[in-house]
Length: 203
Image (cartoon, rainbow, N blue to C red):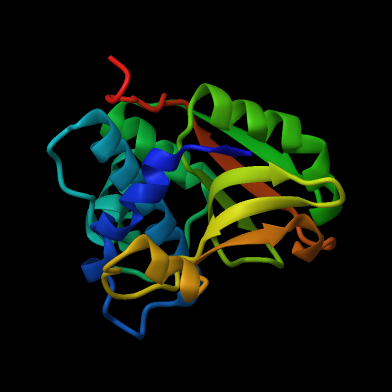
């Protein structure tokens, strides 16, 4: 089982939760933003950077600054994908990311070695987006059983502040998702931030 438990323990402290309260924001956009903010939170905690998690507006401003989006994008409800997540992480934290394109749900199995290697070597959360399966996912780990393979998924629909990690598990805000449940007719793009987990317990 390849999971960086540091991030799993820190989930109750993810600081983007109070950022999203406007129900009118389009779901596809807000889920990707939350996933990006979760990754930013991990990077900040992992690097002990003492920074705040970027707001929606700040993320939009970065993409306009990088000429990825036009000026009207700021304040809009336009969605972003794994490529934009890659751009924002590089701009804010000078972190490169690896983009993996998966043509369909069945093909996810072909990329398990790459994903396992990522968690072994780096440990950072993975942003996962798709087209027909357009609900952004934050992948925290991968497990290969005797019959099935699973991703550990953090559900970005969560609004509020978790008191404990157990609360997140009990309400399925974090869960193991069987690869068989991914959509075969949807492609997926994965953003793998190339930043290593810092284990401060082993100095």
